[in-house]
Length: 231
Image (cartoon, rainbow, N blue to C red; front, top):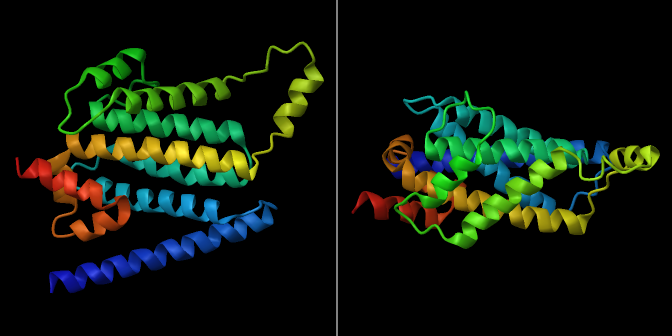
């Protein structure tokens, strides 16, 4: 009976995601955005994470930064479709910061994640592998997002050039593909860390629904969850 209910739940989630992706494609067409399979696959990945965090937010603790993450993921998609690069990186920075708040237990009172929090995460002993290369990828992507938000060329002497660059900031298919790969890798690392750090809470949120969790974030993450639980 439980398996039947879980099957129906996954079926409903798949239908929900399909409707969501159809709506994204409709908006993309209105924005004259060249929608490709890579965009479709990335937005599907993000949609699954939105639902993943909804389960965590609805859990007994109702932790607020999961709600913020959900909002950031929605607006990340919209900013990509509208080619609003600065807002895309604003949302990405917030996503990274709120993942770190969830993992490290940092209060929302801190407007930005500091270098100290990054170092504490690097030095922390997690119940999973967390390599220097993975840490460097997160740190690099965070630095890129901060740099773009504050404007790489704003000090250029030619005011018209800087203004034109702000207005006509194209995000080509090739550039999007590279960005999608980087951000997916960052989020997968964070998925692993949050599961390792909040194992019991996440397991409770997906009580008798591990197949749902597997559909949303992958088999490897569920296997990590069980590995930690069985220690």
